[in-house]
Amino acid sequence: MNITPVNEASPLITLDDAIFESVVNDLVKQGFSIKPNRLPVAVVDALLTCQRSMKDSEYQKAGIGRATQFQQKDDIRSDEISWITGSTVEGQIWLSWCDALKTYINRSLFMGLFSFENHFACYDVGAFYKRHLDAFKEQRVLKNQTNRVLSLVAYLNEDWKEGDGGELVLYQNNEDTKGLKIEPTRGTFVVFLSEEFPHEVLTSNRERHSVAGWFRVNGSKNAQIAPPI
Ligand code: OGA
Ligand code: MN
Image (cartoon, rainbow, N blue to C red; front, top):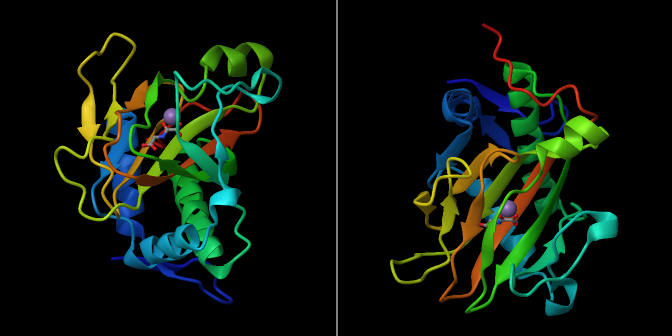
């Protein structure tokens, strides 16, 4: 097993590359990766500390669309979000794990992941996020936008049970109506190509906490997966 410090000078956490390698293999094979309970405990703890220290006033109603097309649409999504900036040590632990994942994927797949943005999301009882794509390929290819290309979602909820609702449903393509259901249980994370996989959050019957993040490419050239074979 290969253990790499995040930062040689002052490591915030030590990382096990095996999980990153497994994510990379899944991405090559199928374009998504579902990892139940595989987020390192130190990272989960850091995220929980961050999330619990947040005040209600730090959350805002989520919207859809980029800058000038931004809209709040309660019939599409009803969660509340708070962008993560990494202003605390715990926030930095989470962001350094994300950065290590990005570096590993770039080295293995040459995806050219460049920047990362992410937020906490809180789904109150009754909240949902209807089926959507996180990014549209045409915008990147035709308009050369710095699109989101890889989505990452991580979950913070203890003991999620059948009947609690709030599952993430990941569809294989636009035609798929069945999808794969993922319970938002603490420590589970999911990675998928933002432009390829429609997904939704089913109505939650419990308060539901997650983190959603997106890696962007810097321009249109680098978003294809190109394993070094
Ligand atoms: C999103 C999203 C999924 C989740 O915020 O775009 O799809 O499970 N979130 O929270
Ligand atoms: Mn989404």
